[in-house]
Length: 149
Image 1: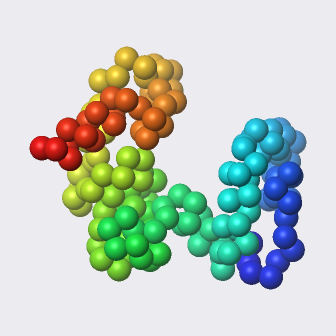
Image 2: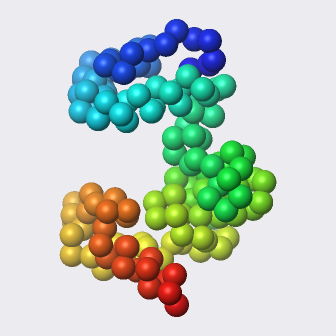
């Protein structure tokens, strides 16, 4: 992933990831099922990243939506562990939901989770519905009402 490493083609999954057997087969199937544009973007981000941590940050957190700084990371939850759904900007202190981009206050969870919990589309076995927040009409309505309140 470091700059100057051999460029990988977008038609095959990244090799040397330590995955074997069924895990590697699942990774290959996932990779081949991705749109070419998405594979190329992931490879571009991997090529530009100085480290594995930077690649992960660029894919899962991105730049700050408030000040556009790249100095972002996953926020720590109340238990001291990284919260995979909350981004934190180290430059301006902004906290936001990585799923719906709502501004958050420290120690609070995003209100879109209340919308999700009340949704009839939730799979009882997994606890999720499989619809991303940016494609969910209920969450988009909730976000719109918040913006106009």
